[in-house]
Image (tube, rainbow, N blue to C red; front, top):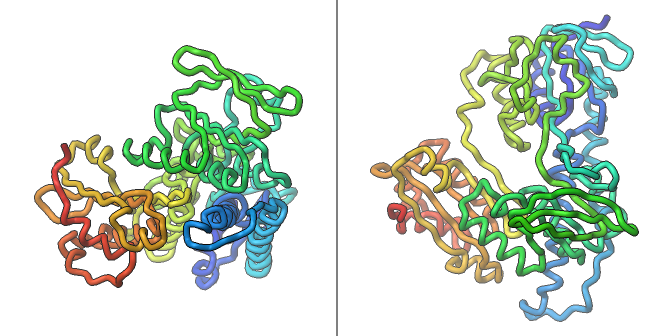
Length: 455
């Protein structure tokens, strides 16, 4: 039996974060991966989807060319070339990552399964380590819809295997995955219909943000059916049919393809966590403390599998916290990070910290301000005036509680506010900051001039 200092199960972004320091510390490391190296981000998430979104934006700009005084021929999408570009970028990233792992670690391209709390089966081999890291990620949930097994439904993985553009894409779920793919395919020329169980899309955001996002997407031709309960699905003459209930009335809709974007679950199947005594919570995620330790102190769970974050950047941060704890005995904690993310519809929607609804739920006394993107010079110059900037501050102090930026460049500008929140910089110091013109960021200091109590 081979013995190592560290065994890592899974190759998401935390793996790339922690490996260099572990190697520099002289640790003997085994890495186990049962699927494509790189995890969701490289293979089915950030890298391919944002590549797809970039192509979709190019298509949209061709469609809008006359607005900028540019005459073009009829814009058409060569979907095979779009996907060739997507696959080239993600495949190169995955192969490069795997090549590096094979050079610097003992790499096992198999499923990993615990035999006991120190021993893991990798294929036909048993390997052992004093420290084990579970970084297995998450996967799409299979919805409990009658007939779902009878139709060739798509998730965020399968949709990237398409070779032909869907004529009519039905999307179950009006949040990140559904809307990013939905808008991209609409821009390529597909008809897109979104069925959402709730009374609005992007339910984690404030209602006005949800409404604004829906309006912008509808302007591009996306269709929405809210407050819908899907009753059943089936195939009929090469199409997917969906029966749903809305306000006690049953209706049907058909499409060429069905994308299910109804949530994720931890990818723990086959790990045999019980053999290691690793506990999970009621949602199936591995329970961890603020250092990423499971119910067994020498077994860590990082990234999506621990339910403490669902983004590449939170996975990377988990890795940084682990390193600080494992190598240096430091005090960085998972619970100390601020919520931050960006949703890559176009324009992007980015948030850090609390929005108004979250401040209300916590019973906080707060001030809020907003500025429409139509008031921002940079947005007007680019003819991208859809969206809004919002901030939330603590009443009676200069503390910034959170911000939402929905508009062109918002995914980049949110970092300015994230830095201020992390460093404890009051908004009054931001108001003293000189920022280049013309940029979106230059309006952030002036945004705070409009602070008022919520109505």
